[in-house]
Structure formats: structure tokens, C-alpha cells
View 1: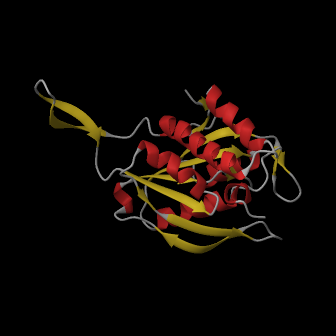
View 2: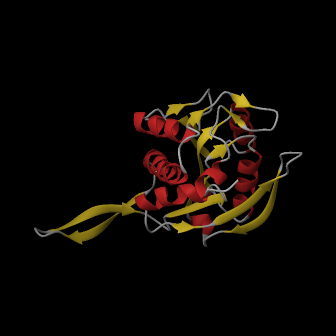
Amino acid sequence: MPVQYKDYENVFVMDHPLIQHKITQIRDKNTGTNQFRSCTEEIASLMGYEALRDLPLEDMEVETPIEKCMSPVIAGKKLAVVPILRAGLGMVSGIMNLVPTAKVGHIGLYRDPETHEPHEYYCKLPKPIELRTIVVVDPMLATGGSGVAAVDFIKKHGGRHIKFMCIIAAPEGIDRLHAAHPDIQLYIGHVDRCLNEDAYICPGLGDAGDRIFGTK
């Protein structure tokens, strides 16, 4: 089970050994693109298993080889996965492996190199977004600016049931996202020490987007 962070009711840190092991693998600067990408996907699946444990269910009738029975399925309009571009794309397949029927939206943000604040350049969400459980994914939660902006955009479009999932987070980012949106659930793979002067997470794992896509 995830561990509650500080006294934040909706913020949880994963303590599963498999998640921690795979996070160590992607931290390693010698881990290549292919392994980094596959580990990121696996971490997303393991975290998604915990983050989605409260999806609503309803009964439907099925016929087994023996008899008919009522059996639970995910209720309503189900799930929307919304990666923050571009690094968040590396986590999408991990969630889709769990819920193949999920719809996928995209939010494009870039960080100003001087102010470190986010700027939107793209937002496309599946409809009706207000009826879905929405999982926003981004491997890194650093300053929290992109996370806050992404949730702002989703709420402006009518989204209500929102979860945010990241692999590595800095305390500064957690505090900022929770202060801005205390109503959303936040799931974190590991909480690192701090941000450096360039707003990179320490010890972190470098630029997740570059490492997922093999760019610099």
C-alpha cells in the first residue's frame, strides 16, 4: 500500500520494492534509452495498479462455461490518461496495459529556461472529460509549475475526478501542487532531496524526456 506523505490526505508515496528497484535502474546514467523506456513503462504499470484501486465498479451479466452470473466491470465513461508532453508519453503505455479501453489526451507545456514557469502550447482532451477519471502522468514533478498548469487546464475543460502520477518528485513541487489543488490525488514513486539552482531534481535522473526519446 502507498504511504501517506506528510499530513497531506491525498498525497501518497509508493513503497513497493519492485517500484523502488526500477527507479534505481532509471537513475543510473549508464542505463540506455531502451532500458530506460521499458523501465518507465513498467513503473507506470506498477504505480497505476495502486492509483486505480478506487475506480468505480458496476455489475454486468456474463455467461461462464457453467452458468450466467453477475460480475463487476469498471463503471461509467471509465478512464482518461493525459500525459504532459513530452516526457509523460513514456508512462502512457504502462497505464494502457492495465486499462486498454482508456482514452488518451495530451497537454503540451514547455518550461521557460529563465523563470522555470510553464507555457501551454497544446491541449486536447477526450470527451466527455467531466465523466471520466483522469490520470495526469509526468515522470518528474520538479517545481510543480507544469503539474499545476496541467490540472488548471483540465479543470477549465470540466474535468473533476483527477489523479496525478509521477515517478520522481521534489518536496517543493509536491507542496506547490498540493497547495494549488488539494482535491486531487497525487501518487509518487519516490520523493527526492531538493531542487538545484537550475530547478532540476537532486539526485533525480536527469532530463526524463531526453532519456526516454534518446535526445539531448
